[in-house]
Structure formats: structure tokens, C-alpha cells
Length: 260
Image 1 (tube, helix red, strand yellow):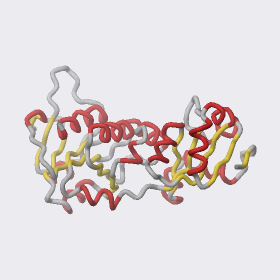
Image 2 (cartoon, one colour):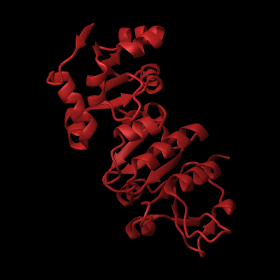
Image 3 (cartoon, one colour):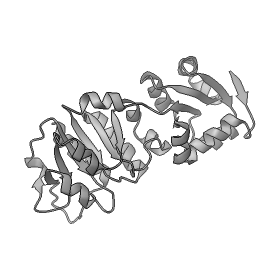
Image 4 (cartoon, rainbow, N blue to C red):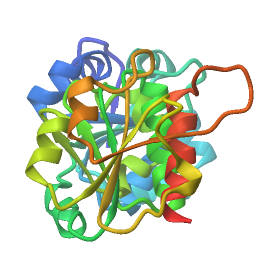
């Protein structure tokens, strides 16, 4: 176990790049997870932790869990508070951060998509929304997530942290577009979530497996090409004056109705 004190160390430089750049995360096949709970969840979920960074203060407070994480990780580095602030993505760092190999969820996803209840995300852009959606999807028991490649990066530090570990556990797949995915999987009963008084109220829908419901972009909703491919249009009835719901709030309601 080594102590790093220089910001010019290659491990620190690479981790800073992982924090800042989605392109670098894709190219390297790595991402970061910050916070003791999220790092610990990564270990419990059998994610491959290549590097564990921790401050002395954090180690003193959480010696037992640090030992477990350190034993599990391929490398462990103790860093100063100043160095940790460079790799951290939070305002009040907890002193634990992991560099993790990108997750291979394709085979896991393929085993459930033929008889599961799936949620699809079409160009969802806000990392906080995506993290919250993943958290709700796991909490309520959705079987898997389908994302278009123009969604925000699922390995963004904000998404990983906001998902509270769900990103490690829920099956997901990233496709070129939701419309192409639906065209290739016509056996799925598909539902487009829209703001349309002529659509079927979600409370009247019987979601039977295998099925998939699509939630769209925060500002623009679903792409027309996605709506056109879906077999059904559904809507969340609202009594107030709001025209629409936040994407994560809408997704949570949809997930609940799908699995209840």
C-alpha cells in the first residue's frame, strides 16, 4: 500500500480524466465510484475494482471496511486530502474513491429480456435524473434498463453516486436508438409514455411480461420515431396545472405501475 502525494502521479492524472471525460471513460473502459457506501456496494456486487484511493482520515474512521476494500482491490493508494480533492467529484468528500472496470451487463440482460418488464430511456440527459431512475428501477424491481446511446453517460460520477449502487446490480444495455431496439424486439409489448390526453391512462394499463415502457428527454419528451414504433401510447393523469413531470418522477410512477 503506497502513499501518493504528487498531483503529477500517473494514477492521479488518469483518475482526474475519468472524472471529467465521458470519452476517456469509454476509451479506457474504466469509471470512478466515490463514497464509502458506493465503493462497498461495488465490491459486494463483484465489480472489478482496479484502484482504491483513501485518505488517512477516512481510513481511521472506517478501518474494517477499508481493510475489506483494500484486500479486494487490485491496488490501493493512500492519498492526502489535497490530492483527494483533485480526483473527487463532491463538495464534501468522504475520502473513498474507486476506479472500476466497465460493467459487462449484456449477457445478464439477454437472459431476462424475453420474459421481463423493461424500462427504456430515450435521450435522457440529466445525470441526476438517470441516477435516480436507476435507483427506483432497482428498488421497485424492474428487470432491466434499455438506454439510447444519446443518453448521458451511465458511468458519469453523478449517475453512479445518485444510483446508490443500483448501477452495479441492475441489468442494462445501451443501443443505437430505442426505435431500432424495438424494431429488433417486436415480441415486446411496447408503451410510449407521452403527455397526450388521448393516450391510455397508465392506471388502466395491464403490464404483462414481456413488455417495455419508454420515457423520453426531460425537455422534449420522446422522439417521434420512437412513438411511431411503440404499440401503445400511455400517459400519467395529472389533476394540477403542471404540464409534465420531471423525468425521474415520471419514470418512478411508471415503474411502480408496471410491477405492482
